[in-house]
Length: 422
Ligand SMILES: [Mg+2]
Image 1: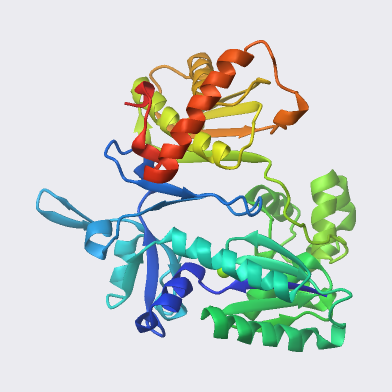
Image 2: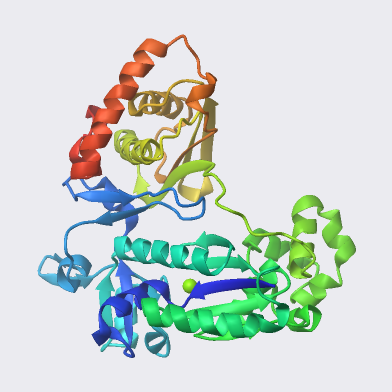
């Protein structure tokens, strides 16, 4: 049997775990825009990046202590404006209609007595890691799927008839040790177990014994990993429930690999096991903002993002060889470019390559609204896959990057910026 374990309202629950006064009341965690990295003032932003798995995204966190007023409230021309969005709400707050991604100001209109806490990603990250280590002791085959989700494979470990009791004990022990409420889905197939967790929530356990009967009336949107595009395609064929999808085998198989994979997952015949710490395959950052017509400013932002990616790359000691740049403009226009360079990675090299790509693809006089940067194709530096032509200067750049890295680990990512970001 597979277990899927998901922390209920994770960020909100994490805050309640460390502050008992928040338990049982409407409360939520909120975040300001992720555009903070473009601010010119030093924010002392640091980064958690422990490389604990491909699915745990690196998170930025800020050391300064934040209060509601200092974090969420702007005073513009004598007017008090509440900014930010809800990232996680307690079930008591949800009862008032408060939802994830809702503006904090709107959520407070629905529930004026609600307490909104600025996010503390470092706390969530630490709790997630502790829970993962605990889970590894309890289940031999366990996968961390996201910051608040785990898969466990109990085959050969717990007999099927004892799985429910095992899950109940696990749920109770996690509550006792970490003060975190989790919901658990149980099924013979991995993705059905994940689906079952949604039925179990909040703080429940749900075991699927008959997959066919269980999926019959569940809307396709509820299934993990069916994207908007696929939803649209399915609806064009009048497929609205997982039961209907199951009866459309021939159609799904005509859609080749993604269609076949989805069909197998939905019917619980995928035979996918759990992934054990897959190596990270790429590192990227993406930011969306109001239109910017000044190419210099767009470029400056690109360089800020490049600095942050460089920091992450060096933190896990990777050597990417493929570089991607995508720029989105108003009215859905997009340009993109990628290049491979088998050279030793450094921030200097990365920024040089980006500059050239930017000059090549950027559209003049158009308002840029989105920037996405990523690197992939990690080469092992031992295996001499990298070009020797520029070895000398590349090594110097790398040494410099490493020195800068040490300073940034101590003092924050924005302690050193290069000229092209200022
Ligand atoms: Mg969750």
